[in-house]
Image 1 (spheres, one colour):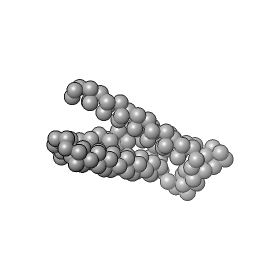
Image 2 (image 1 turned 90 degrees about the vertical axis):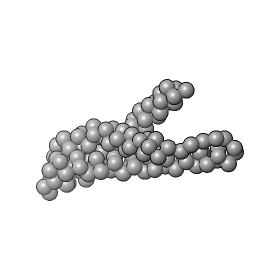
Image 3 (image 1 turned 45 degrees about the vertical axis):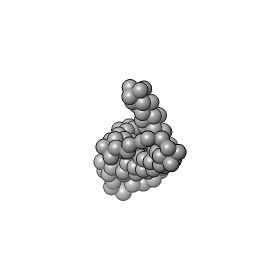
Image 4 (image 1 turned 135 degrees about the vertical axis):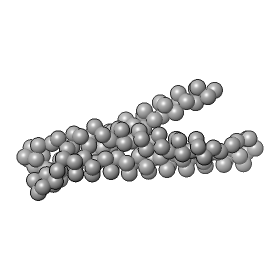
Length: 125
């Protein structure tokens, strides 16, 4: 049972990471001109990369908080229904940490892509 739940959690993290990556790739595509302007006025690649990593962290933090809240809500409903259940702070913090780490790892590629844009091409496109 533990192995099955672990596999379900791994698949959920993978799907969540793909979702964060897609959101960040679309953000880079939509804000190409802004990136070009920032680079033209002196922003370094690490500044652009840091901006998009911060956005990926915020998206994954919001997702992690929503997931923990949903899990606790379902747990309290099960407790009210008479199901014996034990909440583990270690498991909650571990799941939250994995969600944030997955979001950051998934945000690395879009952040690198944004930082590598040519300023001239970004301004024209």
